Length: 303
Image (cartoon, rainbow, N blue to C red):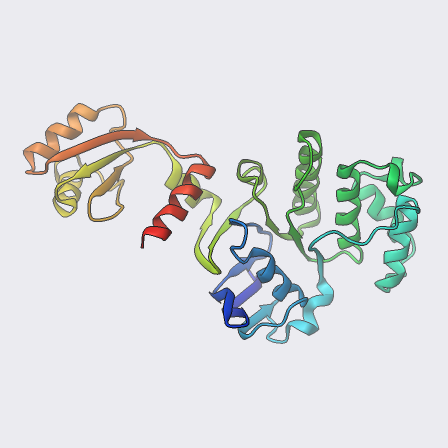
């Protein structure tokens, strides 16, 4: 699998404040990479550096395995903030205007984009009479001019109603599956983004604190027994020797997560006591993406 994006200690400072601080990111071909973080975490600034809209203070951006990103950016499309649509013009007129501005003179390109984003039936509708969902579809269409291999979308579902969110989600799935477009998307709608993402990057205060595949996230957030114990090292030994499982995780100095024996809590307690481990608390848990994110952010603040 080839790298579409790789950053090395990427940093952006404004008057001494690090909006993005030492980010090492990797996006592979075919990924739908969800960048998740609170407001002010540095998501938009990171996307602007990748797209060339902001210059890094230090660090390196490698696009399509090219250490000169300015050479490779013709293979990218991006939607950061909203494009300056002319509300007096039609959907088609706006798309043709941007097509000329981008130097996309390929015959049939505008019709191809209208078909791709599901706007052909509304091509002659004046922008001021279109819905927010239609405007978002058109904005993504503008980013798709020239058939980019890599698409950057900053909060494309922001402000949409449930139907609009569903439309954008289906469009992103189609682009990824049928066009093999690699996508970087930021969003606050965690449950929605989980329906399209294949990989996740979690940002906090300018730092990329964790990268996970969809499978790894499912593994971390699946149902388990969370135990507060007197000795995590002994608890680990009990899991392996008494319970015969390696399917556990030592979270910190007090807590262990056990993914087996979820419905046999009495057996787990008995084994721990027999192994000389005091169990102060045992809870059956299963985290949603939002719960995982909140717990991750909280743990980061406490460090």
